[in-house]
Length: 471
Image (cartoon, rainbow, N blue to C red; front, side, top):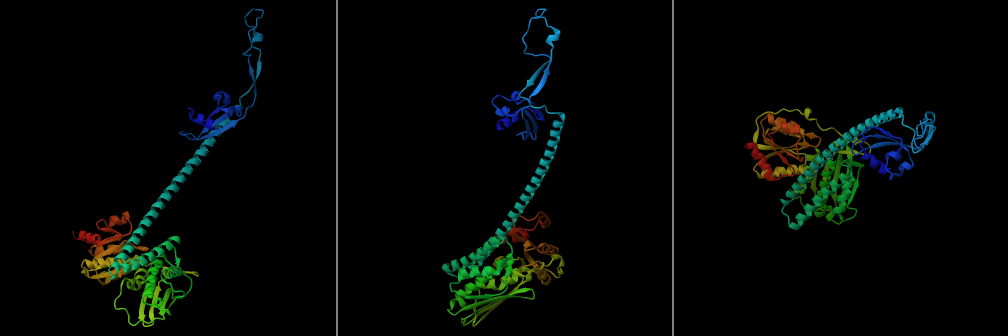
């Protein structure tokens, strides 16, 4: 059959054609003629040819001839002259190696089959092209989103490294503290990836951090309902728990033989309340200086999640309470979600003149925002306001119009575009910071002259962007 197809591909025939004797049409080396006699070929494409082939077996037929062409010449009464009655006597032959003839109706039916099949093929090709196009679009979107997340993570790590390096630490302590923070962040990202960036259990954080930091068994007693945190809350709480446990190992309950940590949580008025209490240790005096770890504990939840963080250094140990809004967690019984405040619903009342000495930072990640704040302080700016949401940004502008602003384009489920519009209306210069490698065309066209810096960024990049505003 392969040899037959090869022969057909080299044939000059382009339309439907039929053969009644394969022995006559083929060369002797193709043995298919020993099994089949007739063939009807329906070409479906040109090069290479896709063929629909119908084969027929031999069907011997009686054929009447006017005379036997192989009959030898006989002398008659008139010599070699033909005798009419005898010469044209009918002769019947049994023809072999032929199939039944292909009728006009059968060839017309083959044409209809070809038309229907071509319509199906074209439709399937259209569907394939559509699916391929959708798959490519989805792939591009995933790559775009992955690039955004990677840039944000790199910006976050850059902030952690920078803030950790500002502490007066030995090289060994620096490596230990920095390694612990980066490892904690890496574990959080790994688990979120395994959960397809969906809600993940709070207990997973506790298990991982306790296993990594605490050598003492039964140090932490915990209780509370089954709770899952949003990806953002999961990352934030991982950093907070890591810092709390690190402090407990160095100075608190984990350092004492009789030390104990009680962690319990409950849902109260639609919000998740977590209570951390250390005991079995005596703290002579509260810390006089606070490092970056304390900043993470005190500011991450309020800034990143819009929640509450309270911490006290009592004589019996550290006591803390954290409140996580409903939109950032869900329980086994019911999901606790709330929509982000719509930017259209924010009351935008901007009065007064810009304060040239103040800067507004709109960034939903506390560590990145805190690092940007440090950069601006090093450049000489003193009055710096940090906002995590569109609503907080507008509230800040309502109180005091800044002389400069740095805006993260994407703030979780919302965009800082309305903040940018407000600042433009007030002739306040601003720059964009983004984790995406490119800005959407509509957004870019609307704010064509606004400098854009990509995360992770350095102090020199920020300074150059600000200087470009002044030129």
